Image (cartoon, rainbow, N blue to C red; front, side, top):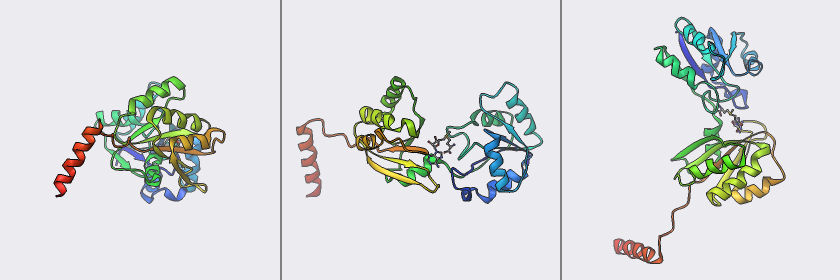
Length: 244
Ligand code: SAM
């Protein structure tokens, strides 16, 4: 059917491309891509030559309207270089405009580094905040960290190897020394998750920036200690009363 198909692609292991994703990529009239060289490799892997057009949310005026117009009669697939489109990747404006035009919008769910990292970290998953990439400049980064410091949820963020040490140190400074996990190269040969407090992780990576792609997962703030010793005693007495 004509419309927009948002297709998740592997974040490392090509075996993670779903049969449904492969089917849509073969049958689409056109695929909107971040980088045609990257997607060409994937298309070769599934033996198809579906035409590609470059797309970014900030693409030249005219690119998006042209794609939206095509959706009236054609199946337009959207992929990013890896993982789920729109998640720290282009696509939000394309989906918004496709909806506004009344076109069919279908998602083909699949790999997403943020969710995969959560499954590896061994930290609470009932509430999490996806922070995307923190700013790389020191001051802006500290501000962004301060903004989320009191949120009672596990934090998930993307980072690059060279910036990892400085980022972990800034997190320890701004959030307190929480438990965290550095997950790396998910679904690839050297997949790993290194856990520890933010300060131990910062020390570990300070002079040894790791290779590859990284997701940082940070535990929620700990239970707030009682406001005063008396409050603590009152809480204890109340608990004991309930037990008896
Ligand atoms: N849309 C993608 C997704 O669904 O995960 C994310 C795109 S974002 C531009 C790329 C970032 O995702 C990388 O810098 C890294 O932080 C993270 N990432 C992507 N693949 C990864 C992998 N295999 N292992 C760990 N992190 C990965």
